[in-house]
Length: 612
Image 1 (cartoon, rainbow, N blue to C red):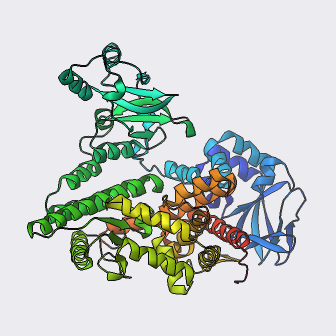
Image 2 (spheres, rainbow, N blue to C red; image 1 turned 30 degrees about the horizontal axis):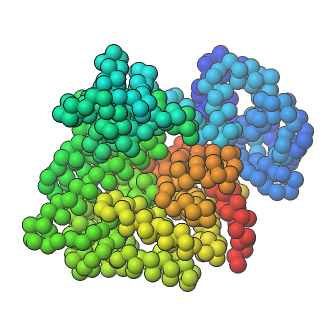
Image 3 (cartoon, rainbow, N blue to C red; image 1 turned 180 degrees about the vertical axis):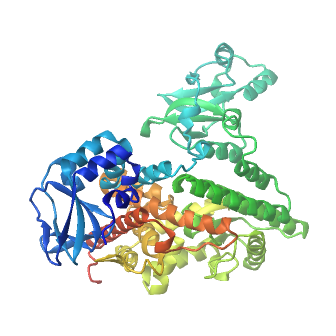
């Protein structure tokens, strides 16, 4: 039995966005058509007077004899042709006995042009602007956005920057600061900041008594800055982590000209005093005991889960989560360092490193430990130290890695020379095990300790990379393909691991391109994609599609885990059809198609079609 068109349509986004009058326009210009299996509904290169809403059956979209996509119940085709007036770019063929509602395109265009949400829905989806697409869904569902976590730094810069030249005297600079009623002045050269002089620095001048000195003698340099497009929350974390009160705002793309200066007070006025995430983050920074950290971390997980459910985007939220976990790990390390000091044990120079999702700054709620250690001293002492750190992290709520990629494992607690030997061996002998090790340890990110050890290792890795290793890593990155079949996503009813089939292929493929182009000190997937785009390795369109797809997949995973955490359960990466609505399932299919296209790009670039 065929449902009444209006009742059927009002249950389906984006028709649910329409007013009663707009729905009536479509229904009045609608008919029903049945197609037997194998019937061509519209042929490629032909015009049609309709857009088609599938009521039952499956329609295949073909480019000549190649099946490009399938459309099933509740899905629409013919939109682009109706909007642009161009002929169909693909043929539509009934793959099963099919019933479609046919809406006259003149009526569709009239509603399309009159309802901004309705038109935005199709425009963002056609252009694969998944963030805009999901924003629209959240808006229509009444989802609340935590604006403070999305607010950009430039939005809270209230004054023009107060600047001076390097040859300005301190007295002249102080007069300008007094006249402009500001607590700092930025020293610029060719429009770029080279230092900042603050009220605190003027106290040093009073003690020395040298008002005629150049500002360069008393300014703070190099400048700690934040890009104007960064979230306010990130600027706040920088202020705390650097122990400063002023931060310079820069912009104008690569030029990095001064846009203004903001203070911790400017930022804190943006936050509600009761903001749970900020309050808990500050408590973690001040925690002196292991039990305090444990209690606070539970609160952080719940706060982050709440923000994810309310709609904060993955790229913004992952930065917050990473900062929270980094701060927690550093607090644990310092506590354990003090324990060893009290025992009279001196620790050699070392650097604590994160790998995996933490190394890429892409941690979400259901995360475990992935770390290693580079040291310059007694291996037994550093193993004992790492074992204690890993135990404490597990106790406070960051579980141990089941695969044992931890600094407590003697294999991953090594001197600099031993780490160099590891990478040389992995690059020279490309076994399955060594490929796996490279995939893990090419995302090294230093968290705490002597950065020189880390930098020395990165320099060595850049010199050790071989073309053969890149090809083997490319093969590995394309070996697990998204399960897209004729009739949609295979196995979605029982559950699809979106980390395995969507997130990993993108992260791994991008890492291959980064390694090939010596981008090793940047580990974040989004940042790597942007650098590769700017270098011309990825086209603007491909980079945008990968970024949109990656964020959608990560957000789907994050929200899924957040719901579990809020309910007191452990989160996982398996998405089932019952977990998402039809529209999100449709976007998921599009995102996985982008993943598949990216894998084909990698295969072609490194000539690995069908293996070696």
